[in-house]
Amino acid sequence: MFKNESTLDRMLRVALGVVLLSLAVLGPRTLWGLLGFVPLLTGIIGFCPLYRVLGISSCAVPGNPATHPH
Image (cartoon, rainbow, N blue to C red; front, side, top):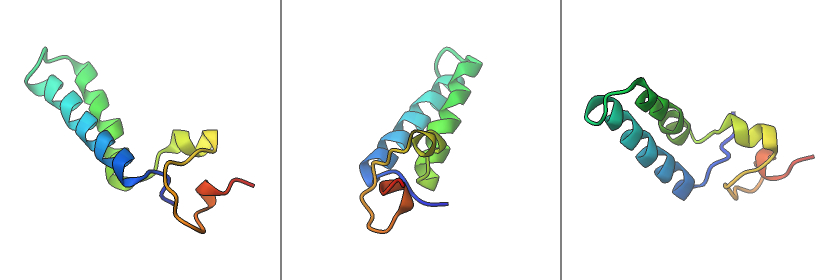
């Protein structure tokens, strides 16, 4: 699996994930806060499946197939 997220993208995803998960625990306590697992996990891993499907990447790593679609 190739990385297709930049460092800034990953940091923002992790922050968003933590905020959404905190809503499930501290905020209105709805299950919608559990959606925070999606940006949290993609931020930790550095790979976004949706980016792959759309053929985009915020990562500028040379030789990364996600940055050079064929």
